[in-house]
Amino acid sequence: MINIALFGCNGKMGQVIAGIVNGDADAKIAFGFDINTEAKNSFPVYDKIENIKEKADVVIDFSHPASLDSILKYCESNSVPAVIATTGLSDDQLAKIDVLSQKVAVFRSANMSLGINLLINLVKKAAALLEGKFDIEIIEKHHNQKIDAPSGTALMIADAISDTLTEKGEYVYDRHSVRKKRSKTEIGLHAVRGGTIVGEHDVIFAGNDEIVQISHSAMSKEIFAEGAVKAAKFLVGKGAGMYNMQQLIEE
Image (cartoon, rainbow, N blue to C red; front, side):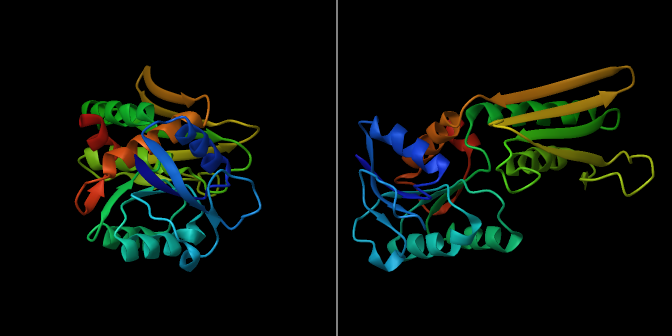
């Protein structure tokens, strides 16, 4: 039985994860952590690290960037591995996560969907084959409550493409203020926010007289929650280091 500490337990994703773990015979939520402690849960919920009494084998974080320092402090102090799924983190915060990974196992992904990680494998192959002949654009769509833009997943896709190319990609987020033709190294990123869209990502390779498009659509939040729980199980027992979805898939 794996005991999970769920940070951001009373957020939308936290509640979905709690529901999935509730039906999992191999895992349970040992405790939750959230600024909102009024919601009713089947496990204790804390808003201060120092008040936590229960022990956990692994942390799943689907909270807010503002909570990151508390999470890292808890993991380091208790030698607990962490699945970091919160997006919108700053470069400084990412650096802190890297430091933690030198002491405990850390699994970080901007998207816990197996399908998105398959998409990333496909776009890397396409980028390597089409480099120099096709322009690359990424369009992401999310619900109207999402704060960060572009999405962490769109940036993860762009980074994977850029790392594949001979010349690093130049990320362009907004063209309306600059009147000039796109350069060959540009990777365009465009964010759409509206309604209840769970998450859609389209990668467009536009060449002369042909277009290649690779897409992924999330129909519910459950796919991300299931991926996070799988990542938590994968991480238990691992040594210090940074782990990702690709390693989970391969194992």
